[in-house]
Amino acid sequence: MRAAALYGILGPLSLSLGMTTLLATPATGRPLAASAASPAATGAAGAAATGAVDGRARAAGTAGATAAPAWSASPASPAPAAAAPAGRSAEARGLALAARRATTRGIDFGRCPLAEGLTAPIACGTVSVPLDYARPDGPQISLTVSRVRATGPAARRQGALVYNPGGPGATGMAFPSYATEERFRRVAAVYDFVGYAPRGVGRSAPLSCQSPAAYAKAPTSSPPHPSAAFKRRLVTRAQAYARGCARRAGSALAHYTTLNNARDLDVLRAALGERRLTFMGASYGTYYGAVYATLFPGHVRRMVFDSVVNPDPWQIWYRNNLEQSLAFERRWRDWRTWVARHDAVYHLGGTAARVLASYEKARARLTREPAGTVGTAQLQNAFLRTGYNDAYWDPSARALAAYLRGDPAPLTALAAPDPATAAEDENGTAVYTAVECNDAPWPRTWATWDRDNTALARRAPFETWDNVAMNLPCAFWPLKHQRPVDVGAGTSTGRGRGALPPVLLLAAERDAATPYAGAKELWRRLPGSSLVTERNAGTHGLWGGPNDCVNRHVDTYLLTGKVPGRSADCAGRAQPDPQPEPAPLPDSGKQPAALPGTP
Image 1 (spheres, helix red, strand yellow):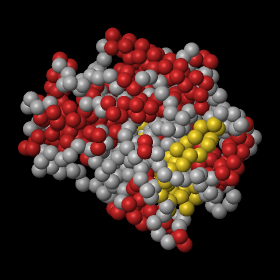
Image 2 (tube, one colour):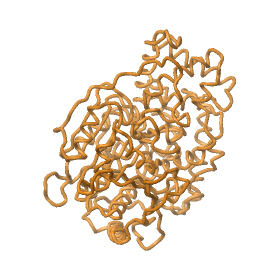
Image 3 (cartoon, rainbow, N blue to C red):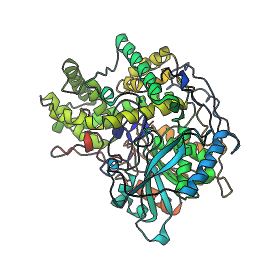
Image 4 (cartoon, rainbow, N blue to C red):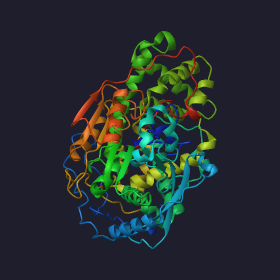
């Protein structure tokens, strides 16, 4: 799922757009990650996946083709991972041992490495987790961790607030730097802000599937209705990518999963000295946070899920991607309608259809002659960002208008790949692919992908085939997949041991990266949860953004534990106004200027 680089891939869910563009990060006007990253096994039959799940879920299964397009009414969910008594599986026993060791060792925080770009008072350290929880004395991975202490009196401190911005494949190492922002001041006064890089990401045992130079090769093409020849090239490239992941990672590849991310989070909790976890997850972070809450409800103190991935086992991950493509089509029309409303500024057309015609004119021109490293794929990647965050609306319209007038510079600045982030982007995509391919069944026949997406592209051409390109390695994944955890199964509310306390969900009604139906599904599955909806808005990632209503609910919950009843509505943020002059591009030309928040 192309996610907001940082909220999600899923956000979620697709493409080789730099992860920073894809995830939701606290909406402060700068990206959460210093840079970005965003998707498949060699001979790899030797790198077999364990397929095992611990805690309360065991899994095994085989991939199969879907019988009907995923966006149609879904049949009953497949048998989810079955709940298993705590401590009965090898992974559960390994996790318990790893957590005890982490409690004893703690984290030796000190000066952050230069590579992190973080300065005092932020401190950095590492926590060791097993590569394979069934073998806790086997190979270990060191996860990088960052922290800044609560700014208020020690007597008011409530512990650590751990943040994950999504992906899979995004790092949260820069999160402590948000403690100085005014919008986070009240929370930062009582919580240590803790970020970390999940397994495979950044310096946490980094995963790679191809050379950064090959990954960042540009210009490339991205037709909304590809020919048979182009589709054959997609298949060939996806097969090669899957082989590359297995060749480079070897047997470790099987252990990049959502379940292991949830287990790692529990070890991090223990290493921080926290009896119960306070967690803020965005986009994909909402999914593995929800898996954590299902496996370890008694370890949860407070959790905020911002821009929610649909956790239904039937949706993970193939159908979530299809539904994301459909949602991006609606959000793409939102942008075009806004541009048409301001035709006196941009001169791209007075209706959404005419703005689309202007975009297609630019696409046709780039097909004939790319603008440096900007081809049609780079154009589409750049304009996909309008679906993540309306901070991109004005700069995207200005860049398109300038290009059609004969000035390619603004479009190049907006869309050209940044060689400086190629390694990070490739790393994020590798982690994204490994986690999603390992997590769940995917159609194993090209005919299924072709049928479903050809039909979908008739309704939603903007993102559909780019999403296919991002996820197609999963069709050729050589490892045994898991079955998704049945999120919420067996959880209960109340004060009893093992009960899940109320959690807070945040969702924008028109979010494309994580469609709103996903928030309602998680709300239904987690007893006692409270859903805060930003009505008639679509920016991916809400916390720390301009909506004071949303921020008040989050502050109240994190500070007191109180939720606003079963649900609450917040009026949507105002749409942006055209700028009187070109505004500076988001950092790196990629990250929306006001992004909080991947499947």
